[in-house]
Image (tube, rainbow, N blue to C red; front, top):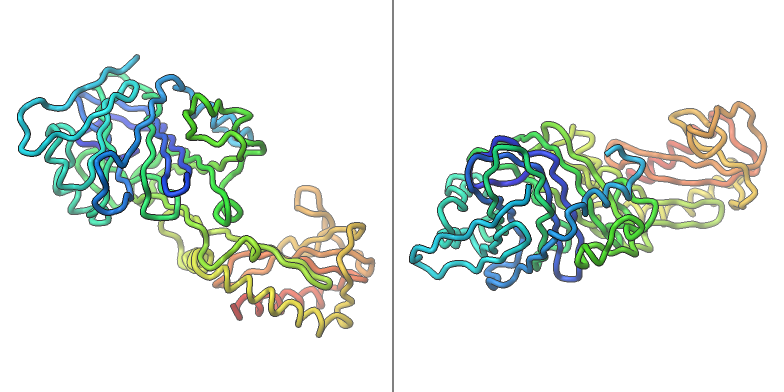
Length: 399
């Protein structure tokens, strides 16, 4: 779903792919739509202020109409009539008309700023009242795709382009304007796809493809938008949700070397659940999201600095031992100690005393679940387990 210059009867099955390419971002966008009149789909773009009129490079994907079907096939775990171009008005404009591009079945334009909509045919502009409700777009640019009316639902082939971005994150245009109205919530029917590397890719908790996307996607037909040698990520957004755009950004203050650590008898891994959660959340989850976005570097430092001291002071009392590959695996399933690695292959572990490694998943009101593994000469009893959990939670809160 997106912003339309005039009324539409139906929009659904929206699919968006996004990827950073150095200072630029690529977007591919597809949907099903029904409409009675020629109109435009408008996508806001976080371009640098006052961009040149050729800042956006449009990509013709008419030759790859099944791009998103192939993307969906890369994620097997999740169940997941030709249009004609309409030209711009040829009446003498007050200002020079914007450049138009034939992009497959569409005519597309880049509108550098809100004021430049005056250079488009009135059918393809957004009303000023819409912009008044969306002040975040005050100095943004816009990609405008002109669509042909149809009495029946039409599945448009992907619209695609790249643009210079003012932000290091990955942007998905998901704000809805369908009948000239900007509501606080909107009905989403979206499947989002992206490719991300670095800290963002390492911390993103969306579903990920088990293999590089090139196993399912023809990267050459995708005109370089998709990196066939890298995995992808997928996230569904369905139902009534906050009417806002989606941003993916790496957690602040966190480097790749901060994501894991190990020492004598312990290992830890930083968890980023809720760092990329969308929309308004309950109060406790808002706290987790804030920490995930802004304080995970502090959490990592607290674990790296305080776990060694904790292990050294409690090594004898807790009968800690260096982690070894042959140690039997155990984990905390809620308050219970289980053998195995997950609840799918594990079971309650009443027998204690043997050597092994235990995976703890501590969390607090402010810090969502982190992972700490401790090695033991003897798996501890419940009272010691409870003591360990309290100590780990204190380390998180000290962050």
